[in-house]
Image (cartoon, rainbow, N blue to C red; front, side, top):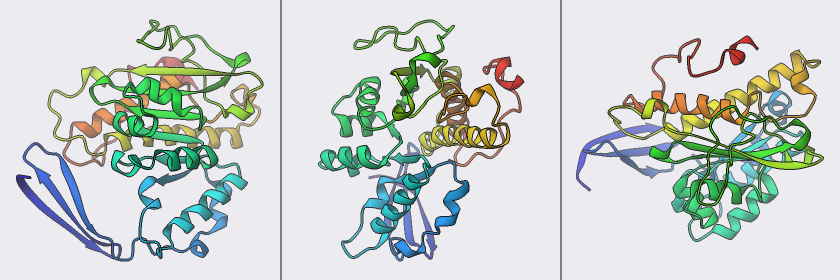
Length: 299
C-alpha cells in the first residue's frame, strides 16, 4: 500500500493507526487496549427507558474468547428487546460477515429489528450482489433495512400493514427482479409482528444532485445515512409521547416519515459527508430543503 499519511489516535481504548492512501481511502491498524473490556454489569438498564433505539456494530461481536464485550452487547440487546426498543445492527464491513453468514443470519433473526449495510456487506450476508434483492432477503430476518449502494444511491425495504399503505406519486421503478417496487414508498415502516396483513415496501433514491463533483473519500457516508434514519426514529418516539392523539400514531410505526422521505434525508446527509474530508458534518443541513415536500415541513 502506498501510504500518503499516517495518523495516530491514542487513548483509553487503545491505539489506532489510520493508514490513508493517495486516493483518500483509509484502513486502520488497531491495538485494542481496554476497548473490549466493557462488562455486562456496566450496562445501565435505566438508559433504555427513554431510548428510541439501541445501535450495535458487528465489530462488537469480535474479540478474544476472554473479552467480556460480546456478553455486554448481549445484555444490552436483551434489555432493549424486553423494553421494545428497536435494535439496530450496522454490519460494519464485509470481512466480519464472510465465512460466518449462518451465524449472522441466525443472530440477526433472533435479535435485530433494523439492519444497516452497504451492497458489499449485503452480498456477504445474503449471497445477492443486487442491493435491492439483498435488502429483500434481509426482510426474512428483520423489519426494516437500509442499504447504501455507492454510486447507485441507497435502498430501503420494510413492512407496512396493508390498510395503511400509501401509493407514491413518483415515477414507478422496476429492476431485473422487482416490478414497480416503489409503488408504496410513501408508507411508513412498521414491525412485521404489528401488521395484521404485512406487506413489503421498498424505496430507492439516486445520489443527491448526482453526487459531489469531487468525492474526497467515502468514509462515514453510510454512517451519515444511518444517522438520518435514527434521527427520524427519534422524532417518531418524541412525537408519539408528546402528541399521542395524532393520527400519525394510529398504527405503531418505527419511523416518523415514509421510506421515500427517509431515503431523501439519508441521501442528503451522505452527500454532505462526501463533500468534505472529515466524516463529521462541519455545518448543519439547511433548515428547509427544496427536495423535501412542503407537507414534510408543515408537520
